[in-house]
Length: 269
Image 1 (cartoon, rainbow, N blue to C red):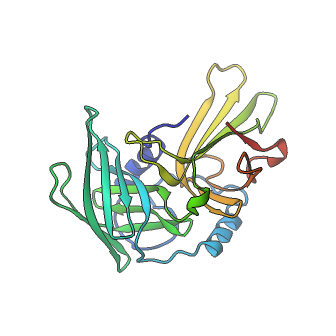
Image 2: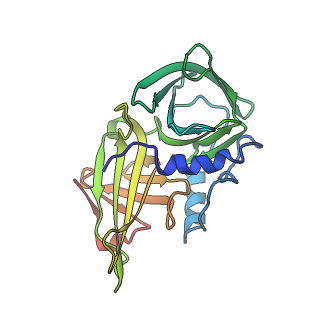
């Protein structure tokens, strides 16, 4: 089920690039992103998340982002480290893989990135907008680039390992039903880089009389406190983009509060 991070996030980021600009460290989604109507309970869950993970601006980053750039169809993976360095991974149209390093600062409500001495993307850019998710820098924009977080290093490393789950059918009706699956701490990129703090959700809605299901896929980030996790998928799903759930039985199962947990847990596979 693992796929490269170049579908849902980058399509949304391309929309955001059309209206980059304005703002510093602030809450909420970018005005240019296609934001779905708030799901039931989303406001209360967001308030719970904000209390549990308050956002502190101007901090060093331990984050991984999938980025889109204007006039480019490529996906750029930025991996920021707390020592104020970052590494960029790019797979070119001919499948050649390229990496380069740079340095950054995060001060005054803006991130400034420099990586001038490389032949691929001489970079000297400052963010025009920063959007928190789960108390972290979840999205940022520069005049030429929009990035969404797909991983981070703020969970307990002792419980960070690849996990994949399939969930029981929910929303079962006369004409349709819904199947969900999840991954945590995946390596869904062409470079095999393990994305700690990253999560993937696939939502299939099966409709009677159609051959193929309606499929939504999205990457986001999750934070874990004990056996409780919170996941944020930005605005990639039409139902729920904020999820709260529980790992159980030594992480062999998860239950998700928003996805009819009474139908049974999602089982590890």
